[in-house]
Image 1 (spheres, rainbow, N blue to C red):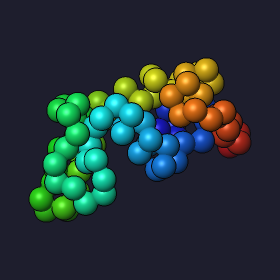
Image 2: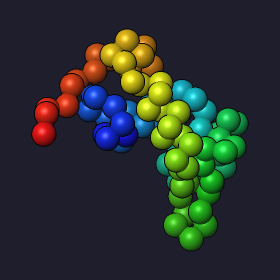
Image 3: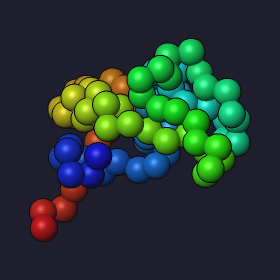
Length: 84
């Protein structure tokens, strides 16, 4: 996500978005997935956690590609990344 959008994006931000979209586990450690998870993630018994597919990254990148969309979805103003 850091490479795809112009704003800082944390693991917390990822969790907020995926829960808003009902994707992945309801809480950490759950094996059951939320209702809209199909196609975006799957549970890996080997790692005992969910694995997220590139399709979810694509969806998030499109949903957070402007400051207006970022603020609407995450309910906080975006912080621009420092130029490298």
